[in-house]
Length: 329
Image 1 (tube, rainbow, N blue to C red):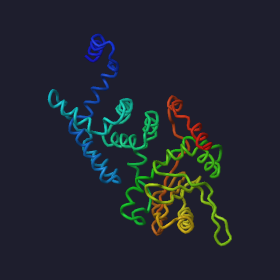
Image 2 (cartoon, rainbow, N blue to C red):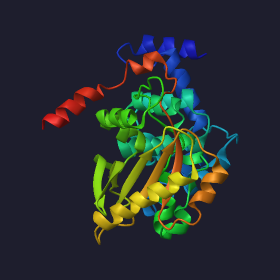
Image 3 (cartoon, rainbow, N blue to C red):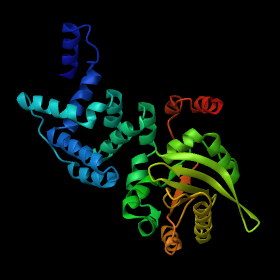
Image 4 (tube, one colour):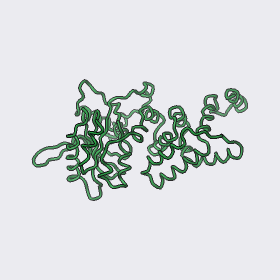
């Protein structure tokens, strides 16, 4: 039927584009995925986030009630109502190519809504969207069970957003590990590709420096990587470990957080946050190590490579050219 409809449209309207059998199939699938009840829920979810932007995870959880439900596709006057409702929702703000990717790659409303929100907020291109989906960004940032002491060390208003900010694991595809991993070499590659690094960390991070020097008691100390998070209004200390998490790592990053609080933090800044990136962790051990620490610290895994199809790699934007342009300004 779809093949015949496509042929009829092309015959009667030869100048009209976008009605191939493949595209008509996607249009049918789109209507099945987004009936009126789902459109209404999308609209309400986005309205709630406008009022309380830090409640992303709660909104996504609420959307999960629509999973695996069946709805009847209505026609005629009700279809006109659906068209008006559609134009009010976030769905109408995203290009068709993004929707095709979401229909092909994502199976749940909660995940689709999150990628739509992320696309609009961060100006995500379709190629980057594909890579984010392939790397499991939704699961790493929204669904992962994260290890931190944020609920005990941050004000209630900051706790949810700081937890949401964390990913587990982080994926640094652009870092090439040669033989035995070396922390300094990983740091060098991360900062050489700072645009990619910031893209993986997420929106709001501003790079301050690497191996940031502090002198205490005539002894030199160096913070691996230092950032400032604009939305949290806080410095973020990132420490890299080439091995699995050890209890002493928590004490070390807590020490560096103390240094930044004492030497850099101003009255306008919130308490500095520490993020410890390891090549693996025992969740129970990490939670015990953070239990008595008074500053906010999160512990996440990281991966130096992730299998991404070669055809997607060839479509990546030329980040190196952008970095050179930024450096020259």
